[in-house]
Each structure stands twice: as structure tokens, then as C-alpha cells.
Image (cartoon, rainbow, N blue to C red):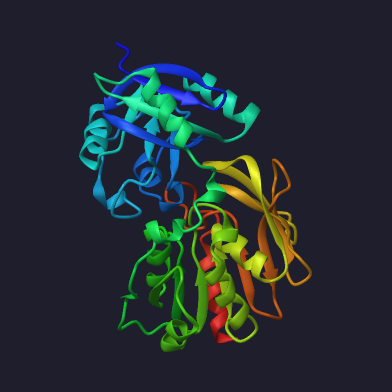
Length: 348
């Protein structure tokens, strides 16, 4: 049954089956993850994107809220070879359009050949190819979503583990996964989650032992306020960042970021530590990378597949950042010691 349409750049239209009705537009990306669909769908880093699962069956172990990384689904639309009823019903409840019964292998190959593309989808019994093309025509590039942080960040400060005995962490919420906060709280840190556009006075009120810049969606150059906070506190307070956080830190300290062709999204990305030559498997979800770290940051880890920077450090300034997700929900636990290393900076 054809009652859904996907229009990609170049105005090619792909037919599919509607599993959750509606229209949507966004950057078309894919993940190679074969588990963790609940975590991926609730990851704020997928805001303003249409997520294609390359693994053919999504939903084979149900939907459990305790696996969610945030309080809602973030991709604007979902595409798969086959979605189970559990996932389809969840996406219907969330009001997120979803389609299946399409050749996702062909779509993933097109993304790999042409890069992440603008896309529009229309799903439901009244959907037409023209509806999908109309969504495509209105779609923006990710860099044009200049205030995307407001869609994924807390609006007011929130404190986790207020009575903890560990260091005080000021976490700039650019779209933080819940498991990052959990990983800090598990080590007894007191985590003050601040809006992505927090002011210097907001950070001062925390009097932090550590400044932490979270993951998040979109172009790091659009998180100017977070970069200004980094500039203000670098050298005075230990500094850490994950994913977008690494990119924000690099930009703030004289480096440069750039858009990748199709990014890294999956749970099996190999990363090599240049100091120990150890390779770990990592979970990743990003479409931008650090092209030039500048002269204040040392590249300490690289992606085995394409040599892009995966870790940046400065021991003198107490800076540790990672492009991948050390909290690894879903995924391997090879890199959980990141949080130990970061919190150890607060005692030096």
C-alpha cells in the first residue's frame, strides 16, 4: 500500500507506507545503530532532522520509557524498512510522521553519495507527492536554524543531586542527553543544568568546579553565547564538552568547525587514542566536526575511519572534550572513564 511519499533534493520522490500520519521536513540523515532506537528517537541532537534507520527492523524489543534520553521524540520524521506496531503507535502519540516499506539501503546509499540532504515527507491516506515536494521546498539547511538551541534546552536552571558531596558542575544545556546528567550524578556531582544561552551571572551563581558544554543539534557557530561563556571561564575553571560541546569549545578557543558530508551516526564508530594507541568503539551522532583545533587544543583521539578529531585536550588549561558520546546510551561502555577523568580535574 502506498500512502506516503518522501521528496529529496533533486525532487526525486520515493513511495512508502504511512505508519504515523502527517507532513514534515528536515535534513535527511541515517544511523547505522541496530539497537537503541528509543534512545536515538529521544536524542535532542536529531532536532530538525528526518531520521532513517539503516537496520531493517525497528521496534523488535518494544518501547520502554526508562530508556528515553529526553521527554519527547526529536526527529521531525522517521523512516525505516519496517517499523513494529509498538514504535508506530508511539510515534503516532507523539505526532511524529513515520513511514516504512521503502528501500532504506537505496536511500542510505544516496545520502552517502550526495551528503545529508533536505527532505520532505507526507504520510496518510490523503497524502500526495505534491505534499512531500511542498515540504521539501520549505526545508532549510541546518545552518539556517540559528536559534535551534531554544528548541532543546531548559528555559530555567535545574539542579540534579542537590545534596551531593561531589563537585558542582555548570552544564550548558545545548540539547543534553539525560544519560550525560546521569553519568555525572552517579559520581555524586551536583549538576546545575543551565539554558544554552546562560549569562555569565547565571554561571557565577553556581560557582562551578567544572564547566560542561553538552551535545546538541545543528551548527555549533549558532551557539554563540555558549562560546562566550567558554571564553570567559577558560583557564579559571576546568572545562569539558561532548559532541556539539567539543565543537563549541574549539570555536571559542580559535579553532574552526565545518559541516560533514553525512556525519557519524551509529554505535560502532572506532576511535584511536593517539597517546596509548588504544582503539575503543563509540556511539556517535553529529553532522559537524572540528576542522582545525587552533593552537590551544591538542588532538588526542581520532576516528579510525576518516581521521576526524574525536578528542581534544589541554592539560595546562584543564580541558577535556570528546566528539563521541562516552555515556554510550545506546552502545558500548569502552569510554565511560571520560567522566572520571573530567571530574578529577576539579581536584587538581
